[in-house]
Length: 267
Image (cartoon, rainbow, N blue to C red):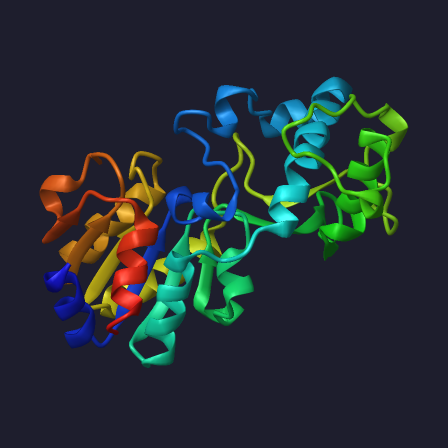
């Protein structure tokens, strides 16, 4: 812990790379861990979404089921630690695999965040590209599929929703094409503009703090390696082993919240 605090204090250009583990204490389940979203839900691929009415309905059913927890989630101590670095003037940017929008909710300026896998805070049209706030679509859809008003007590995110009818699958009001959350689905490539922004951040950083990522999903998991090659000090803070543990200058195998809270008390 002492070494982490010393590294944070002396670093001037910090890039934070965050994964699902930074958000689990907010009530949002991770994806690949025990009890994660992928243990109960088979992801829908982008081509399936385009070609299959049933897959589109399954996709929106899942999004509606997790939306109440996503909407209600508050930033964790890990997110607050990132904010503290920003307040100290030593944060160059945040590169995240997460789609929950909690870095934005915590107060980090959007221009400092690279959402590699997109965001659940917005819904986009796959035709004209129009974007709207996710709540404009998902609040009503979750209400309809759960068949009880959200205002009258909300929805248990662990309860299964019924499958939406085809006419309930959201369409763009501008062009009539399919809407989907502004996330990168399986089968879609990461946005080149986001990768370029991430690479720019990594060229000049003196510390890469990887928080809550298993560092298994490529190409995002190569980001710590790129930072290391550019001369950055590499800290990996996550519970459980990662393939890059041998590359780390400092490896902390612990839950994020207690570590972040301890650092916040002295930083």
